[in-house]
Length: 340
Image 1 (tube, rainbow, N blue to C red):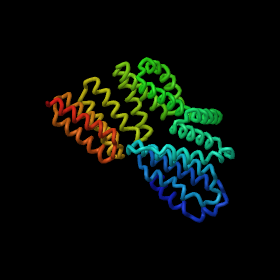
Image 2: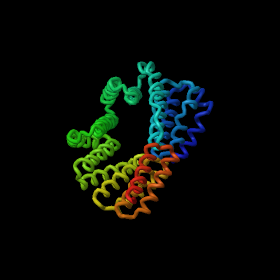
Image 3: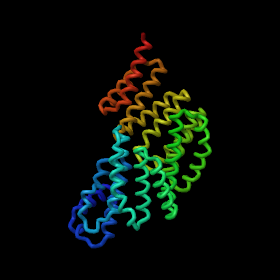
Image 4: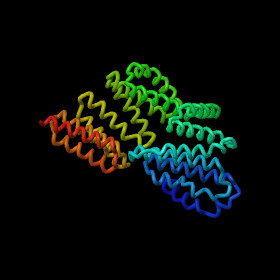
């Protein structure tokens, strides 16, 4: 049955008296599970409003046998959707509000008899603690989540956590400019790739992409970077998670620029831009325009470069994306300086 039909059925079921009067908790479990499944499918398609509507707590709160575990699952999914919306639409996250929502559910955790839900809750709480700068508490709840996932043999979640951990460490090293330490991550990424190959396509796409970044930025091994970025893109296309795909095409464009293959780079950036426009991804509408502007500067075609820079500035301004505004203005100003 197609997802859209299932979604219509869900919206028909949610306000029904049949469900609200039910004495069978399994029916509530089924409907909440269906709601989250449909929400996740909509999220994969970058249909964010549809994804949020499917897990709207107000639809569920008056149901007989609506339990804390249902509220926990729906809250986690709602925060997950909002997180991707913030990334896609260049919005500032309200980390404290998300933390408070999750922390308020902690008293119910001791009564959860569903270990999968408990593991998801501890993981979400760990992420929330990290988002407000409480790294010690974050580590404690992450370890509790990993312990539960290990016991329940949910190694896919473990692989995702491990992928997130190494990428965060990688980003910290980048910010600190520690090239040697970044190079030391190469064998560690290879270990994670071997693990995620067995347990999680999602984590595998993540690990291959970040290892490719090292080959692009630190070792300048463009052939290996190209291979890994293509592998990651193939996995992301197979997964069908649209919010990830524009970045993958842009990464390929970045490699082709370094290789001097400007026409191929433009193809990659154009594809990234097309998908980003389709889902409203602000950054990856902006970034390809800036990069293609740079290509035309290299080609000594200043008029075309300026068109791309101005388009980037327009996008950033319309979406109040301050970082993008600054980037665009800086590139336009540099063009003006070269003319003087």
